[in-house]
Image (cartoon, rainbow, N blue to C red):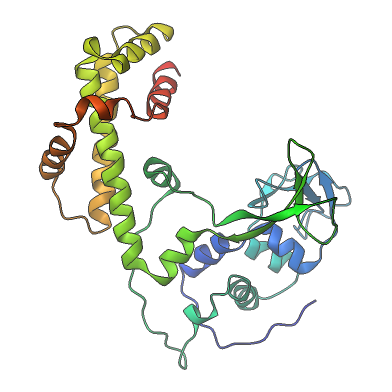
Length: 296
């Protein structure tokens, strides 16, 4: 078992969630040097649960690019923290210190004596809200570092469609780093993402109202006919309005100052002189989302 340098870190209740998001189960598996077997893009390890006494690879799988770990035999899921405690036999505090070190976040949890300077409580986005405004909802991303002539067991690689071996490394999601290091800029960027999505939705709503006079309207009609929901256009409008309300709540939670009415006025100023040119560039994925919503 690896030793832990007692760094005098101080943890609060919410820090458990923060560190479990900042480090992946796969990183902990590699840190502990646990044996495993490749199963396609995933890795199987022996179940971390001490009362399972697992001896068969294939029961417990680290999947979703290393972000999740679940034993399908005992039906339990494991976080980075629980793997360290169950398999590494570390105490809760020791495991938290290890995760802080792995995430390079020791400075965030340093304390003087037993009292740590209180951090400003930041607003949080749940996964559905992240998807709504269009930001990644996972703590790590895979960054390509280069192309290799063949497989290198010392590096993480995958083989692309052309047969090349791509060398990649897991890096912290830039959104996670921004939340940690520059929350004011993060708030400003989230406000901007909300404004961008609300402008898109406002344009969609206008096309719904004028559907008989433009190409996008024809696409909407085709979607409704495909789903046998030709009378459901009002429902689509209600759905768009509900998304706009959700975006406005996120916008205000992260410091936005404009009211819904002011946002609407801003939207009209944007689209009125350039409506015909803007509608050609509207993203169609929003329509496909509504297609799924209506047809389910």
